[in-house]
Image 1 (cartoon, rainbow over the protein chains, first blue to last red):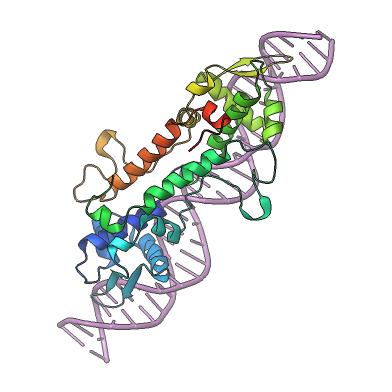
Image 2 (cartoon, protein in one colour; image 1 turned 60 degrees about the horizontal axis):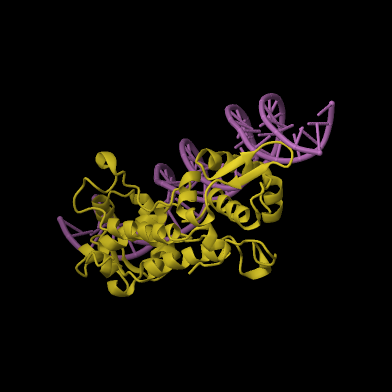
Amino acid sequence: MKLGTKGRYAVMALVDLAYYSQGKPLSLTEIAGRQALPLTYLEQLFIQLRQKGFVVSTRGHQGGYTLAREAHSIRIAEILEAIGEPLQTTRCKKESGMGCLGRKGQCLTHTLWAGLEHKMYQYLNGISLADVCEKQVS
Amino acid sequence: MKLGTKGRYAVMALVDLAYYSQGKPLSLTEIAGRQALPLTYLEQLFIQLRQKGFVVSTRGHQGGYTLAREAHSIRIAEILEAIGEPLQTTRCKKESGMGCLGRKGQCLTHTLWAGLEHKMYQYLNGISLADVCEKQVS
DNA sequence: TTCATACTTGACTAAAATAGTCGGGAATCG
DNA sequence: CGATTCCCGACTATTTTAGTCAAGTATGAA
């Protein structure tokens, strides 16, 4: 139950972008430097973030990335999902009856884990990039 | 952000123990069979659970494990901690100023992750083995 | 034009964590 | 005794993580 760097870095970088960009593109070099993140790793992450429609890229000199959507409309849960950070507490596949489903008397703990997953999602889906920038995190 | 088997199996097994034991010791063979868990792996986990005071062992024929404490007093969060399931969203060491603390302007996301961790702990610390048995999980 | 900056992409990899297995022991009961 | 059951340490295969590296392509400025 640890948060990996993929999800952590993606969110950190997007928050940095939302926080420091004034409509102008920010280069990954700048973001990586400010947040102390490995540049080449960030490059990988941002390709995915662009493909998923979170950011827009501007190539060449003075280029960089800009948020493609409003900061207050981008939720943390979305980012984690887009980047492939699982957020998974059960191993039961909904399809094909894998895991504890499909057996009887088993997995007394299923609702426990499902509840945890829900709590986590609820929290992360209730917070936007803008919220983090304004420290509106409860 | 995935729950590992260590934590999952430990909780599953203890719930099974709380649910099926009538004061009598249950063998790991029985629990492992009922919950479809690898026996030798469970043995490892239960040694730790015994050392941490969650269960009492009875050796020999008709032996097995019994809960050492009341089921309603054992919280899920405790079990996960005892078994070494991290439940960790930040990487900042409290001591020695590692991580984002100690720098300035960095880790805008710190409170975000700390908040998530708190939510998770709150949830798992609010549920006991007895609650899971009675499906009193909200 | 040329050059430096920056994004783009795919392949690759070292190290750590995960999820166990295996072998041998020791205690207890029937 | 001997079957059962806990006890313990060592070992290992696989997967995941957390990146690096090489080789581009696009753009703006000098």
